[in-house]
Length: 403
Image (spheres, rainbow, N blue to C red):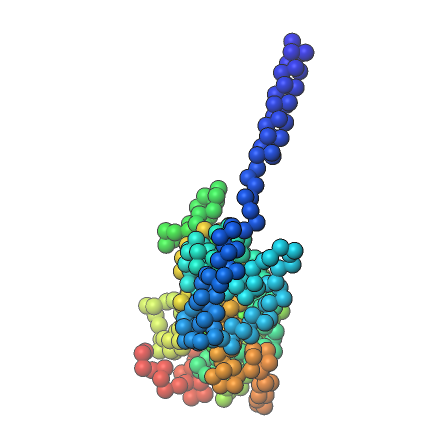
């Protein structure tokens, strides 16, 4: 009986190995490196790259901007940075690096289907599927360290000086989260299903006065809230350990010392580095209402930043059917391009330096007889600011218009 069982097991194992060999031998083999008609069309100048993209680039800058969201100068500047990494090292003829970048840029900006982009640029559909994550990864690796560098304490102080234009001193950024639609990942259950009744990942972000993102965290489960997502991020750890914030300074026109902080909505916890509105609507004082109004005036910037990101890079509007890791790469690449575009616009409009890292050193205000208490209770800090905003030192005329 044991011998018969052993023979049966050996027979089953032999059949299993044979099936594996057959499957390996019957794997799908590509019929050709590139479809012959695509090679013919490219060599003869057909396709959207030569007929449309290059024509706009040389002859119609307005249409080129509508096509790519970049001026010709902005496109050429960023392309020159990326070109060495876009160029393929292959013995066979490969797609020009400018075509590779243009095709992916057009996909990010207009969110056309992969098939439509492949037809337009006269490349294979499978090639387009490989091209998008590959080019997005290059954008992230090359542009990310420059345009998404996490600010130092000195940088945060300069950002706070820009927020002074909105009469909210010591603010180093506005924070919020948005749901990025995705196709439900396999075996994920309800982890990505959010309260808005669709599948998503969360993009948590902080932005500066000019709607540039200074920190992002992409990939949180859609079913979680903003407080949980931020609390489990690397950014929260930096702020909790006080590794990023400048030292406390005095508020303008006073001897009140206050720390630097982010501003968020009521979904975030109140911290000494993160302020949120008063939520007790039944017992609100005028000072509390003023504080809430001025905070919402500043916090609105992050909502505008998200809106600008979605409008300029339409891929953020649609449900992304890629794997989660690839989806994160695609979204992050639009963030890098978003920051690059705003920085270039500021530079062109008013001679703004290339990034706030290169901004001039801020003023140093000298005030005497300052009492410094380095322990800041979040509730007390918010109360102090609310009183400061209705005092002669910190009030502004427009704050009473909507109170």
